[in-house]
Image 1 (tube, rainbow, N blue to C red):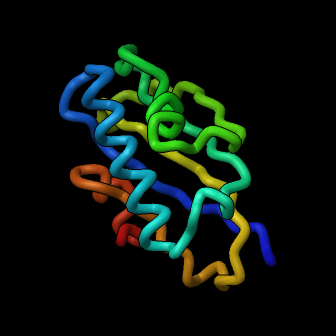
Image 2 (image 1 turned 60 degrees about the horizontal axis):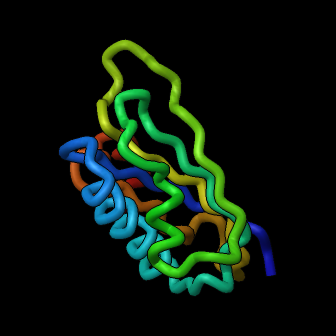
Length: 120
């Protein structure tokens, strides 16, 4: 079994804790489903949020989904002028037999514009 990394992102419509839970939950669910993963396949997840998001920690959404025994960490994205606002990104480390080229990176909604080359 190899260690692989999966990327993803979602843009929030507003900075509200409930909305963040919903959108980050949808992102994590899509990453698991599109890659045929269960929570047992997760090694760790790194979350970043743009500096304009203050309502909650994105990792809290993972805990609410039942991802309770996986190491999670949150950090702030660089504050780059002109960057897309209200974005939560993930970098999940997983165990998978899939070749690197078959990993499905997930960019939901407007965040698909961030990585048109790999967005599913």
